[in-house]
Length: 207
Image 1 (tube, helix red, strand yellow):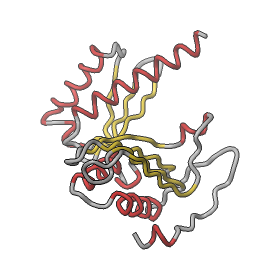
Image 2 (cartoon, rainbow, N blue to C red; image 1 turned 90 degrees about the vertical axis):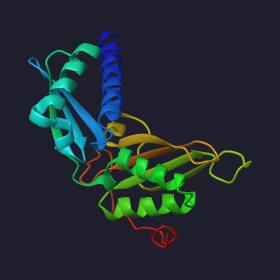
Image 3 (tube, rainbow, N blue to C red; image 1 turned 135 degrees about the vertical axis):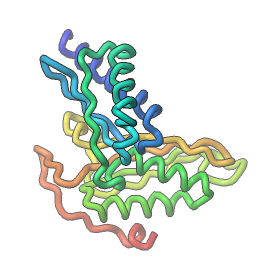
Image 4 (cartoon, helix red, strand yellow; image 1 turned 60 degrees about the vertical axis):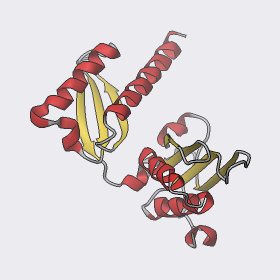
């Protein structure tokens, strides 16, 4: 029970730090974090579109974030490393925000999801799933859910840790829409199966 409780506590702390940094680093194009604990320090790797905005002039921003994380979340010796996102179409949070923005511009939800899936797979992902839930139609229509997926996306077991996942919320004039994106990045190896090349359906290709 002690090990399980510690695992849960670590997951909660990671979630809280992620939410904090997402709020603080919106302008930097925050995507995700990785946390690695060692006997000496806690290494927090932050993936963003604009690393310079995380570091700040003379390192002021990153120093402030480091001190905040230490005090707010009781993390011993935090060290923040900043990494530039190599491909934003393989980052679930950035994809989810892009989809949310398109919804707010009034674009067709089903076509937006299909187009996003196609681009994700064309950028090398081994699997992807996008779920949109909420007011996806005109004023007065009931809320509904649209789910689009392609490739292999595990939903249970330890292998789910190999899947990148994020959510964003869109606020078009008819009501909120939740967007959840799951991506299996290129090069991912699953212990229980070998993934075959993905053949994109015509409906998605023509989106």
